Length: 494
Image 1 (cartoon, rainbow, N blue to C red):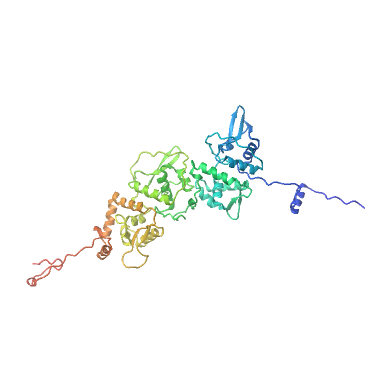
Image 2: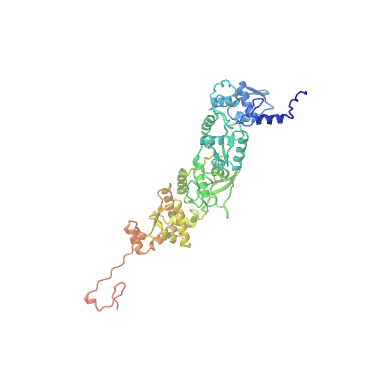
């Protein structure tokens, strides 16, 4: 009887497959640790420094700028060598020590005592940028998975393609996991101390970099064309893009065009032209070239620059803009020049400008006056403009739209956050341009007498809308019975 033939294994790969299928493995395999700090080389050096207390490297063959720039490691230079040790001055030094212990599964010796020096943190996670750190910060604060598009909107200074590329790297390095759709979440294999380390470091960095403060109120999509933003900001100057651009210039002052793009999330830089008007046709902004590129500022030569700036700053308090971290400093505007702009484009175009300026000096108007001031436009398009201003919360009517008794008065809505500043701008416009004020006054003077009586009975009368009183006819006596008189004034005719 022949002995049984022992089973043969054709390849190591076949044996691994069989072991996986059976649920048993011949050796214990630890899952690969996530790469949190830079690339695998930087993270391994950090773990080696933590294990051994210090790491000596050849000064001519090694680069340690990333891990030293993280502020978590100090470097001592000597002829030919550089020595790395963990820093005790990092604001989250003890938390970082715990993160390394949990990440490497090793005991970490005590840190070096603090020297009292303020650490310089350029690369919070030993990467060549801080985008990875900011993405982790947003996910930790949200405490839930976030959509990729949400992260792109919360990082307006970073291009959407760059955010997507960094997210792919974080998923590849097992720091994040991708869920259904376009949602990403923190990986379950991350060290438990990592969230506290990120939050403490962000609090320290926020003293110099306001972008490290998580602002969920900035989570708005950039509307295209003439659509409204989802935070409810009215299109006071025609488009939401113009409003955001003007608010940024009013709050932060002169800046480079590339910095303005990073504030508002615009990824193309367009100049004023026939097809593009990023700041409106009212010539609110002046542009000039510098050594670093194109610069922008509100035009101080504009006759309404002061009330306009107050209006924009007040609106920015309700509809906040992203923080400004200039890359090239604050540019100095060139000497002022004479203002040349379209005054009828004060609020985007001629129609909304005419509607809002018809409230100058009174604080109220109604549809007929708007049509009279908007000379040359059909009543239908004027009514559509009024309806848009009401729908966006700029104006409010005295009664619902539709047929009713008496004129339907229009005022700036009480809920509009910059009501007083907007009215001040409107009143200042007719002081600067008196002919526009004359047009409004003539429109009120031409109202029918019964309409003026309607306003007078409601306490809305003034010199321009005072009812015209007729001269009373003289009473005739018996002696005047045979005298012919003028039927209008009663004067005796020859």
